[in-house]
Picture 1 (cartoon, rainbow, N blue to C red):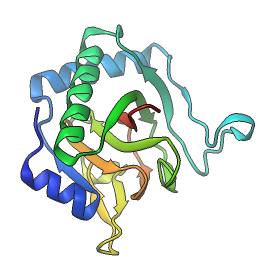
Picture 2 (cartoon, helix red, strand yellow; picture 1 turned 60 degrees about the vertical axis):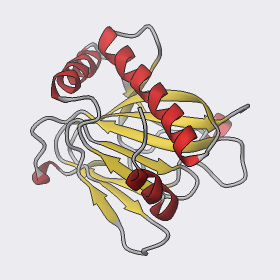
Picture 3 (cartoon, rainbow, N blue to C red; picture 1 turned 90 degrees about the vertical axis):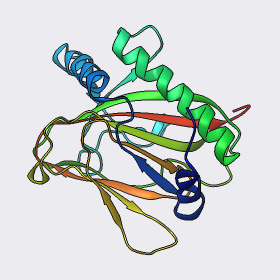
Picture 4 (cartoon, rainbow, N blue to C red; picture 1 turned 180 degrees about the vertical axis):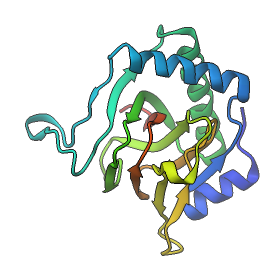
Length: 200
């Protein structure tokens, strides 16, 4: 896998890029089915905010349910995990970011207005997340379903909204871009990979 020149330029200039057809329709639908099976099995748990002793549940800030995805998961989810691995190598090489390990999380917003308030995935100067990559698993998404990703690029001052349609990938700089998940009025599925710098 390689980044296009346009993607590298967008990441450097705007802090993000969007790629459609990341897996191809057949593979995307297979991953979606595997993710839905995890939801149906009841393995996802309410997501909290903050870390350590400050960790808490607060649906006024964050309303999704999550599960970490590891190698050795279902074949479909493991295939996506390896695709994320290849993406990290491509971003590291193409944008000279020196990425290392990564984590993958499955998240479902159940609808009913569940959202995630504006935030960053990392804070500058700490040894933590460098790149966020979100892949969407929502077949037949419609605008009335909500749950769009709103990004706040530093260079334009105007927010950018990304519809969470099936097989769409959004990649952005974790330290730079504030973002939020707008209220979801239907079930919304996504798998997110967070990439760290080497040695962290």
